[in-house]
Image 1 (cartoon, rainbow, N blue to C red):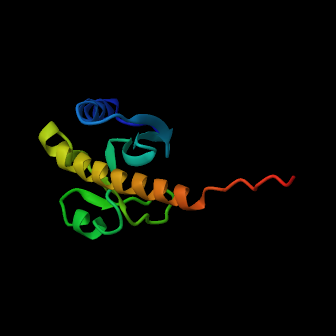
Image 2: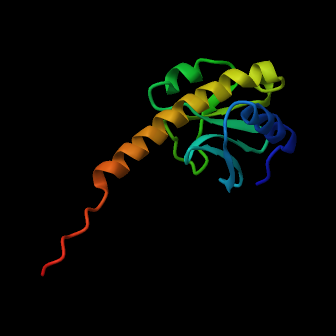
Image 3: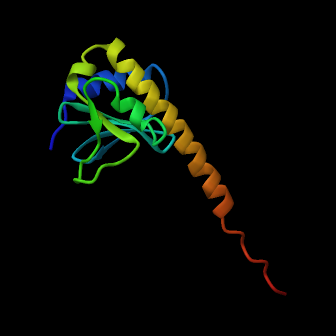
Length: 126
């Protein structure tokens, strides 16, 4: 599956003005990672936003949204946003803000987990 280059360019432009990010091909589309955590992506002509499980239901109350179910299994915390809701920079911005907010939470959680599970080297015996 391909992705809408125009939408990807809009996302790229908006994120460049806000933060550092990395692009990865994923899910047959393009994914935008912030601090190692997924923020958003583009599959076909739809935006994917990682809003987190706590914001999932509220995000689905917005027009032109549905649960992300790429493999046929719903992914709570991720949503598709239809092209009708991402046509302009002003319409796109709130979705990217939600993705950035959750990416920050996910990155902190990942760092905290890594810190608590870091292996302590064994002391050498004489």
